[in-house]
Image 1 (cartoon, rainbow, N blue to C red):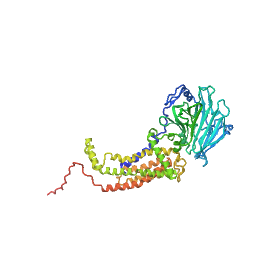
Image 2: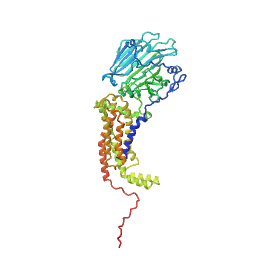
Image 3: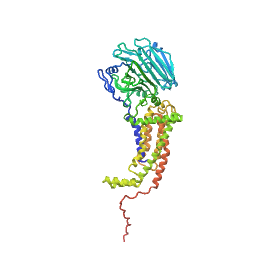
Length: 578
């Protein structure tokens, strides 16, 4: 095993070990301001008016989730589409449950065919509150009459009208059958105080997205708020980093706001032309441990002539669906921390390739990972081949390089000139050693991207493959990490052919596979499957390269003497004494 192979193994180990530490979940929220009573909010690109500052700072908290009273639970309207079932309740006129048809609950003990519900009992998909300087209308307390359901193309249309109010409110839902989007528009009458005190809308997101995963603890740790401004990157705030006493507020032109867990999210997007949220407030709810498990997230939307329009996405963090909903929603879960700019493009490329393979070959995601591992290895084949040949050239001239370095150790300038001349004689350049390491450096961004893709991609959620019940969870029998470690050892053993055995090479050959097996022991089985396939696909090339190295070593002539070397006189046999 040569130095470059050792370097490759070390770099790979660093990637796997260091990725969770150098890319921790982001806990900073862009241009945020912690608002205390009496403070003035000034962050963001478009500071709100004094009315908006007061409104978002003193936004009333939505009630904690709890069971609905029996007399209210009966007043329910069901809207069914191909993707989901929405249970809209009154008072409130907003969905109290969202059941996704295509996804199943993975909670331990749940029946196999239990459809996934995104909301906790008593919570709402969103809550609406109309506010002015002098008045507040919380729609949670307003009774609505449901109109007859109608069809508009492939969409279901449902209208609700306030039953008894001095200020009438109308809500209209338009829900396409083939998406996870709910389009809601509304009107509110002129307040009693007059037209000089216009309404503003507070949109409360759910307290949390219900955990329906086998690993509830990991799903809870993934709870976060994200939002996108007109300028800059997607900002995120983890529930565990929010304060339960002081709200964190960000202001400016905000295009959308979301709450998410590991695999699902709720996003609210203003739909009226040239309309954006003007502020978002985030406050953690009561903590059950060190981490907050609920949060009160409120977005402020100015109204025009008492009307508003929102699109609410309630569904999976599916790359295709999010991308079709609104710009940049597919980046709601920023990868890579402070290296986001480097990792995210590769993650996008990887996702595009996996989705393309899934649709093109019409096979399960397990076989997609197998194909992807082989394809990546074949793409790197020419680079590995060139790297090996560069390594063989370096081995041939290594004794001469050592002589030149020793001879000109006191004159660096002459040493560089002599080494450059030697490189030219063998058709090489000073960059040949660097180019030999290139195949080991190129896969690094892909390794980073794969770590995040396998950790967060809903396409692998609940997908079985062979003996694996779920590609997103660890192998229950630990076959894939063991096979990955054995294939890695076999790859190292073949790579040691033709290389002088040293303690370092032996340690790398035996210790690295054991270390990687321990590291991958509890990783997602899909990630273990991919790396095992990569190792197996690399075996033929490693065998051919090791044979070429052995043959080259056998036919390499002895190194010529260094330039200007003085030939030693042949020794004379001793004379015999007379």
